[in-house]
Structure formats: structure tokens, C-alpha cells
Amino acid sequence: MEKKIIVCKFGGSSVKKEGIEQNIKQIVEENQNRRIIVVSAPGKAQKKDKKVTDLLISAFLEQNKFDFWMNEVQSVFEDLIFRLKVDFDVECEIRKIKRHFRLFKSKSYLFSRGEYLSAKIFAKYLDAKFVDAAKLIKFYSNGKINPKTYDKIRKLGKRGERVVIPGFYGSTIFGKIKVMSRGGSDITGAICARALTNSVYENWTDVDGFFEDNESAIVIEKMNYDDMKFLSFFGSSVVHSKCANICEESKTILKNTFNRSAMGTTICKNVDSVSFGHATRSCVEFCLQNTKQNQKIIKKLKGEILFRQVVLGKLFIGIVFSKGYSSERNEKKLQKAAFCVRNVDVDAYILQKSNQIQAIKKKHEHAHIILNDGNRWVFVEEKV
Image (cartoon, rainbow, N blue to C red; front, side):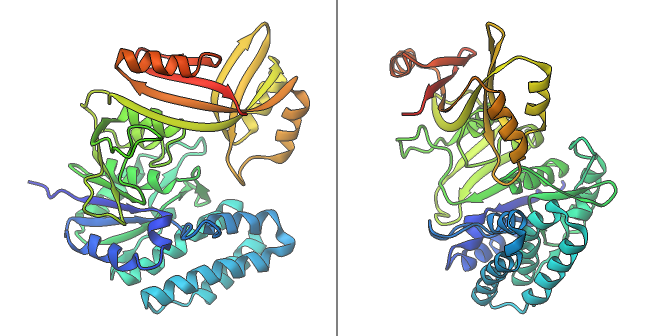
């Protein structure tokens, strides 16, 4: 029988928080089947901190302060190297990144370097092999995954060695770096899990799993991929919504790096809908004339569309903009074309009990229902 390979993904908070490095090593080494390790760029240890990816975005947006922001990135990694006690010349790596960016001005290349450096450092720390995601994960020009990706990962799994892979990016078939949407390290882990037969995907983060609702501390022990996708898309940041479509044949377990004894949430294909779930998301609602020109502008924006509705020839559309990715020029065009622009909250629920349905309807009596498919409800309300 083929050995079950465990794919472990460690998020930005797991990588960054002081004292967690030994925890990561213990998690990886306590089970020899944990052989594919995906890491994010360092996130926030405290509220005042900036994520490494945000520092790299700032370096791109403020190129007159490029060296300042890159020094900030270097400082974060120097701290990580000191804590892990590994021999790694981050100064030399930062020089290479600066030189490459100044030559080619590639936004995707620059944004991906946090994960790249993080994986190189953790490969040394875990005594594992570093595998560059650009050589492993290939995309077509339309963003779809090239099937050869799965063949490469299968071959990697058969070697039996422990490897560390950077999350968040891959490359096109021509070798150009391509980044995913924010939180894309979850997607990298999902791609690896899908490629491997009989695999388990452990997503290690800083919470115990999916909670029953925003106010409750009760963790949902089991849920299906449809419900996970629904809650993730509408605001729960535990795991990326796109993972559901990629690794639905595998078992995903959400675990807390800081509370390893917690059971977490297990996500499987054949599980009934959970009895209750709630996620909130903020977005911007635009009211536009439903013209082809406006549709073209919307298509160019790198944001998630949460709702879209045409009323009396006017298009009401709610968009969440991804920080650092959307074109400011296109955003301004959309603002100019809009009759009105307002911030709205989108509340999403999964529920089955009639008393819950009535209570939530009452809570949102003045809101606009944008989705109701029997046990899923979504409401839009203007922010106060």
C-alpha cells in the first residue's frame, strides 16, 4: 500500500512569531510522513508589524524609497535567521533581488521573494531540500494550472525525501514568475495535496479552525468543501476559498501551530452541511450604467466581485480590491462612472435550523438578500 504523504503548510503568523520556530520543527519531525512543507513569507508577530509581502508591495509602489523598504525586508529575515540559528547570507540574496528587479521591473518576481527567502531559510533549518515553486508549479497564460505540475509533484513525492516549497507563486510555461492572490500559499499546499494519491493536507495557522460564528469560540469539527468555500470567500480568512476546488478529493485539516493539541477542523467531501456558520466581509458597492465600457473596466480590476445585480438598467456591483494588485487608474475610472459609491458589509451564513433563519432575517430586515439557496444566506448592509 502506498504511504500516505502529509503536506504541511505554515502560514505567515506561524513563520514570524517569536518562539514558534521550535514548534514548527517538532510538528514536522514528529511524523515522518510530513514530507512536503509549504511556507509563507513572515507575517505579523504584533499588530504594529508589517507583513513581508506588504513591505515588498511598498517597495514596488514607492520606488523612490526602494532601498529603504528592501532594508526593512532584510531586517525581518535577519531576525528570523538569528532565531533559527542557521547559516544563510540574506544580504547577498537581497542584493540579487534588487539587481534583478532593477533590470526587469517584474512586479510578480518582487512580490514572490518573501516566500522564496522564507523557504530557503526553513529548508536549512529543517535539514530538508529546497525546491523552487517556479520550477514545480506551472500556469497557462489564462491562470489555469498546467497538468504537468501534478506529474512533477508526484515524482517529488516518490523520492521519499523531505522538501520545502515556497508558497504563493509559480511560473508560466515560459518561466516568468506568476503570483497567486493573497493567501496563495494555501493554494500551493492544495495543489501539492491534489497531486499526491491518498494524501492529507495539514494547513497550520494561528487559530483552532473554523468557528460556528464570529461571536462563538466553538470550533466546527467537520465540514464539507462547499461550506468551506462559501465561508472563506465571504470573509473567513482561515483558508483560501480556491483550495476547495483544487484538493476536494483529499482530506484537509486546519490546525493551530500555537495550540497543537487542539483537534482543529477536518474538511472532507462527503460531510453534511454544518448547522451554523458566519463570516463578514467589507466591500465597495458601485452603482453604474450597465454598459460594455464599464464591464471592460471591471474586468481589468484585480479584485473579487462579491455580488452583481442589474436593476432598471443600472448595475450594482460589490468589489473587494486586493491590496497592491489593483490598478489605481481603473479604480478612478470606475469611481467617475458610478452614480454612487458606498462601503457595505456582506454577512454570509450557513444554517439549517428554522429558528436561526428567522433570527437572522430579523437582524437583517433592511438589508438586501443577494443569495439564498436553501441553507446558505448572504445579506448586504450599508456600513454605519
